[in-house]
Every structure is written in structure tokens, then in C-alpha cells.
Length: 139
Ligand SMILES: [Zn+2]
Image (cartoon, rainbow, N blue to C red; front, side, top):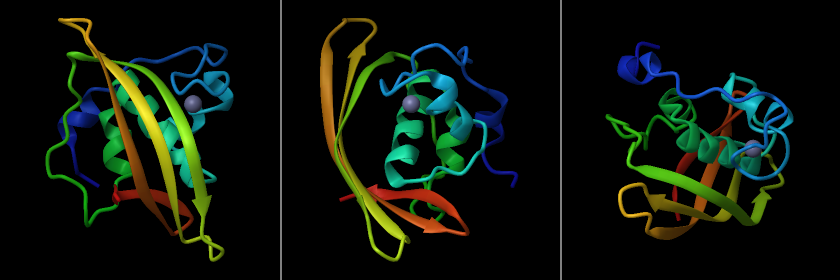
């Protein structure tokens, strides 16, 4: 795929595998690290967490790769003026056929310039194709 050359040129920050994962669940190396490196996420929640972590670390490529092609924006840039502060997964589920799922989460960030905190809450929909989960849209 030749998509997002600019995004792939910017690889984002790396973390040590025993560093706390930005998503807050456990160590980076046993949490979002492998998914950011290309391993298939097991569940919609795992993919959602890895996408939050990609925002936090500036891995635009992972966001492109895990966005369902039909709903993916043509241009995807990570706002460098925002610092992601934390993630709460409120609920998640997978349909019995294993092909779609949802995650309800709340993410907190702050504007680096003003240090003002803000929160977003979203119910996201995911689908699984070819053994890989993709983010589709906010419900
Ligand atoms: Zn994580």
C-alpha cells in the first residue's frame, strides 16, 4: 500500500516494553506495543486501545492502517498541540459471529499551549475482515 507516505515517514515515539502503556492498562510491551508493530488485535477493545496509544505517541501510520478503507479520511494528521492524558474504556462487546464490535470510551487530553483539559466520549464501531479488526466510525 502506498497510502500515507507522509504518515509513514513519521514513525512517532518509541517506548520501552516495560514502560507503562499510554492507554493505562499494563506495560507497553504486553499491551499496545505489539499491535503498533503490526500484530493483529484480538478484540475491538485491543484495537481501540492501540489507536489511542497511536494518537498519544504520534504513530499516524497505525491509524491509517487500522481505519476501514470506506470511512478512512484521505488525509490524516495528528495534532502536535495536543497531549493525550488518559483513556477509560467504559464498555466493549463483540458480536457472536466475531465480525463486528463496539467500544464505549472516554479519552482525556490537554492543549499544550493553554494546559486546558478536555474530554471526549465516543461509542466506536469496529469490523473484522481477514482476521484483522478495523475502526469504522463513531456511532
Ligand atoms: Zn495499551
